[in-house]
Length: 126
Image (cartoon, rainbow, N blue to C red; front, side):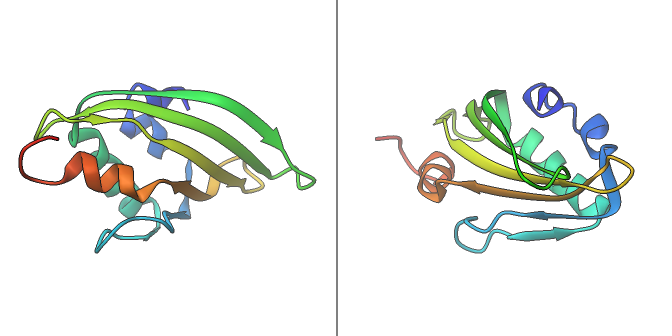
């Protein structure tokens, strides 16, 4: 999570398996909900990095599961949207599944889509 916190996208993406899948089931509107493969995940991570003028991620808890290849993280963001200067503060639950080589095979992230919509909408802040 430190790499995500520091938006070190190139290093973060290197932790993924080539055929990894990143899923964002609650992505609002027409946002993509699934990224297949390392290149697609890199594209999303770069977009996310560039969308913020400030960004930090804080891990609140890590939960082990009965499957040693799956870890669940509770984390939150504190950021500023580059385009409009609005704050972006969200809470996340992310399921990480690792392959036999210790690479991220699946990243399934849940968050409040309303926070995304309010932070990124155009028009005056309220």
